[in-house]
Length: 118
Image (cartoon, rainbow, N blue to C red; front, top):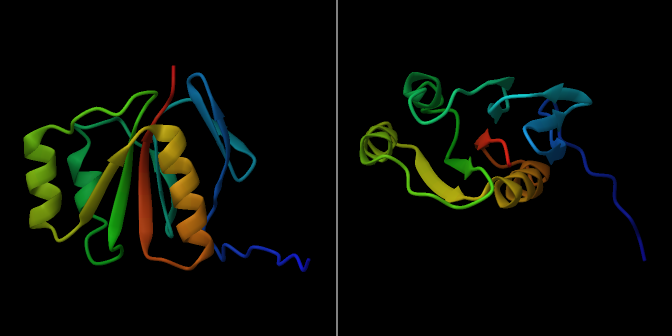
């Protein structure tokens, strides 16, 4: 078997997560986070719409991790993201972390907005 090193370029993958935190690039974030090719920033949740809409043109898909369980996005958030031309996939945060890391390793134009798990 041949192993191939994964190269994420300048972007940072999710190294780990647990109750109330994410570890990204060796740094612990005790909040929601927004990850993109531009880096990592705090994300305050569904009301933090301008931060997400600002990604328009830079990404094709935004993964939204809703914490431990999958939950519905507010209709107004979904409408604003769609109007900005951003595709949205909603899942629980563990699944969003894994999906983000895999597609990031493939060089895709993606971002992830993640709420911590309980």
